[in-house]
Length: 228
Image (cartoon, rainbow, N blue to C red; front, side, top):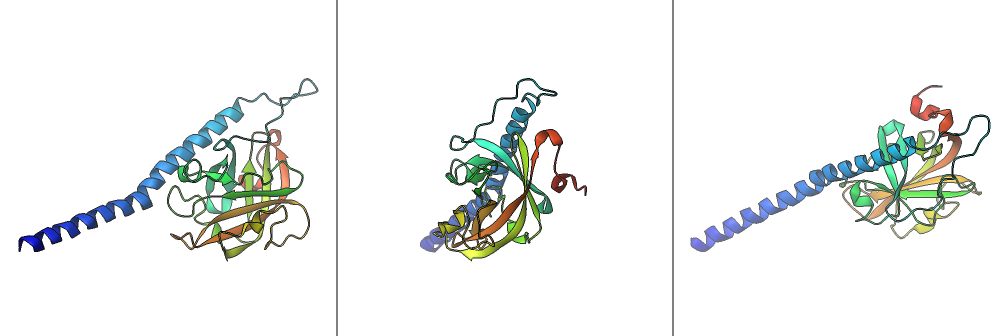
């Protein structure tokens, strides 16, 4: 009887531990990541607000913005109006330093939005840790995505995607991403995340093509204002 009671108590304890772990993974990591992502976005917006305004009628132009960033450094905000999502983008895709903080990570070595050709490739969690890319599978050709930086807004139009590809498929990060509708050099966006949900078995890919580069001095693009 004593042994049976001890075994029963052990199973109850293990069940409680498992329940706590699942709660931590599915809820608490999102709370922490959303806090970190919000702080990163606020920091970027404050930095941008303090920049010198473009000169009117001549004068000295503001210092050019850096084109390379330290690992983990935030430098942009991605807006997906259809999904109501806005998340900061940081350099690198390190899980502990970037992705687990609810940030979207830029694949080091791929293009930047300001580059005149190339593939701006980013990754983010689909579940847990803020899950920034949980709903990107709902995007369809024609949907707009905006990447906001210190100097400009870059609007991309979704052009297609891959429902599932192996994690080892790095060809989607090439300047002209393999599996995309694109066949010639251009200014592209590739978004990657794990699939299916709650699994790292494969990667869901969404491709976009830049359709507008708009200086911040001209205000937000139509994709964000909803004006046509």
